[in-house]
Image (cartoon, rainbow over all chains, first blue to last red; front, side):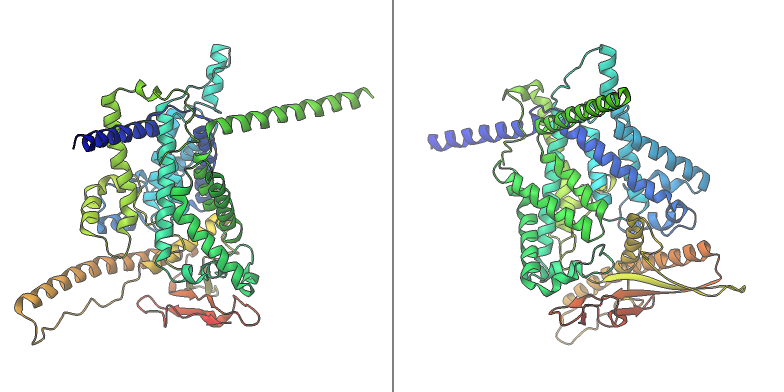
Amino acid sequence: MNAILCAAQDWSVAIVDVWNRFWFTPTLPHTLALIRIFAGTMMFYTHLVYALDLMSFLGPNSWVTRDLSREIYKTQDSYAAWSYLWYVESPAVLWILHILALIIFVFLIIGMWSRVTSVLACLITLSYCHRLNGSWFGLDQVNAMLAIYLVIGPCGAAYSLDRWLEERKRKSQVTPPRTVSCNIAIRLIQLHLCIIYLFGGITKMRGETWWDGSATWFAVSNLEYQSIDMTWIGHYPFLFAFLTHVTIFWETFYCALVWPRLTRPIVLIIAVGVHGGIALFLGMITFGLAMLIANLAFVSPILVQTSISWVSQNWKRAGQGSERKTQKSAKQ
Amino acid sequence: MVDETHQNSTNGDEHLQISGQWRLAISGLLIVHLAAVVLPPMAAQTRPSPPVIFAFETLRWYIDALYLDHGYAFFAPDPGPSNLVEYILEFDDDREPVIQTFPDIDRHWPRLLYHRHFMLSEHLNDAFMFPRAPSEPQRTSEQTTQQYNEIRDMWKVDVELWEKRRKLYEMRWRAFEQHLLAKYDADGITMKRKRHLLPQLPIRGEINLHDERSYQYAGRDELFPDPLAGVVQ
């Protein structure tokens, strides 16, 4: 009996230790900072596109009026969904708010006052999602997810104007510190992504076409989604069935296979293939890219730091090289 | 679930820089948050279980505020046909009637703007609710009073749900009409739902995704002829 109690105690201590290591080990901010730049750019672009026909989406005679937007939530007994855009109807004010939103997203991308701009960007993203509840799709879900988690971690601690200003003030290069909040933000993106894929896979399993292999055919033969004609694949049932099976297996087991060191690269390479395919062939470039941005959470900050340093060094060298060439040719 | 590649910390005890009480409080919040992420897709499956409904309703305010209520059913359970909207605008002056469809790849650019219009028509179709309420159940001779009352109670819930959904569908339809009338300064509009069926397998001969026979039309209160039928190529 004593042995069982000891084993149970050891087990619970181990569980607590693993939990603490998983969530509370401080991490470098480079991955989160890179996600900030890409996700901020995607948020900026998403809202920039609304600007092409802003009044059709937010104005008094919009596709989904303010009243309808609120009624949808009321019918579902959702009272906590909130948008500041519900209180504005004047086109002039809507334009001012929209331009301010775009400026906030630019600040987020460049990492200017990141702690404040990340909160504002999150508030803006959620408000647009809640207001435009008749035209949303997966892109908005991923944008909102990343906006929320950028608030939690120090997303401007690297590759940002904040960092540059701090270094200029101190007159020396400062290595960004490892923080627990950064780890929590990254962990939440990772787990949220696992849940998205798991339920994406589970829901597909309820369908027939994901089992008989024809789902890929039905996806690519949908004219309204199609951006590049892939209907030739219809003549190769073996190929489209194979792609269907790879997709559903990858999606369902992503949540398990993305963690071990051995399988992670394979899972991430397939992610690039699947989301790249969605972006190129199914006309959802933004959604495909947004999912890939979220997948960056599984790239270690050391690898991000090393890769970016390598790119910037080569960039500098290339710049110096072309400068020398210009000087030489000027002398000649 | 141990992630080996993301642990960059050299010292395994570094997490101790946060006090035990803080770790406990943050852990509690993390569990609540993850529950709020996992509950909506669980509730979105065919018929959610009582504990899922209970937990979902408990965390509903949090789920809604953070826009977490999603089923993540991308192309699932099966990739289906596209749902579009076709409309005819009429004018009291000399202008010719305008017949258009949304989404329209030629008018809606960039691709994201096109996709927004595509989602508008898809959401309208998802919101479709038949104009007649579910009919009242008739009591059969085999049913006890209690059995009949239970069935009637379920019917009342269905009617209440139908009323809400039908109202939303009508509001959405009217909003679309009003938008198009205002945008084109038109005096009359006739709008219909348009479904583009998918080419069924096996493929025989040429594939023509523009085939007129692959489109079906339905008015505001009509059902499509056969929602699952496709066109054999």
